[in-house]
Image 1 (cartoon, rainbow, N blue to C red):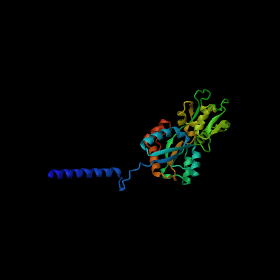
Image 2: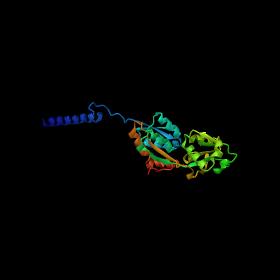
Image 3: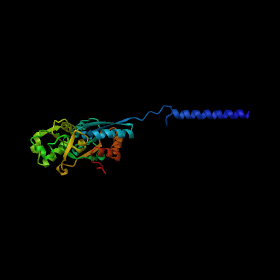
Image 4: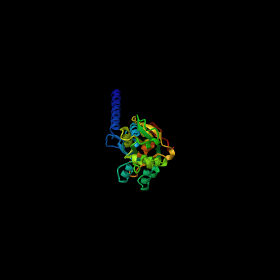
Length: 273
């Protein structure tokens, strides 16, 4: 009789534990309805970024996806001036990475960016490039040769690289002489394309752009004192609805992992330290 009662008690305990385990597996913390947990919500961040960052940001995107799989990065790449206008007109954007300070300053004046978030993220050098097999242009001064018909530059009013180019040529007293040869482009990527395809004998781009192409070669870097320092400021757009995620990504962009990627693509890094 005692053995029978003991067996019954043990069976009851096992059944009780089994039911408790099932309840804990099917329920959610703080939810008595037994509803299964939903997967983490995916957050989309729209990053408006200067066209010259394209190659580096493609690798950044892969690295960040491995670290934060619930965050989807969408890049809107164009000339910094164009991106500034888009943000001013209400286009969706969570972060802005510009190739020039004036665009960010203009947005700050209109309270369209979070002032406390803005940092100097990267730097760059301004260089003259020609086709990989070109032997005619060996210096900036060679652009004055009659054989050089077209020189690609970004539109100075909207493309920071074009603005720096105008400053540099003016400082070197070459702007007035070379102006008839300039073919203005919407961004540095287009300038590079002009030279790669032979539609321009030479072009002014960033070192990072030249480094990413096998179809051009660098003739000479413009003197650092011939133009303002090239700085890429980055910050959070005031209208973002994902401020926490935007801040986390901006923090990542300043990290050694991201800065190493930028350095790999020819950018000057660690400016914010």
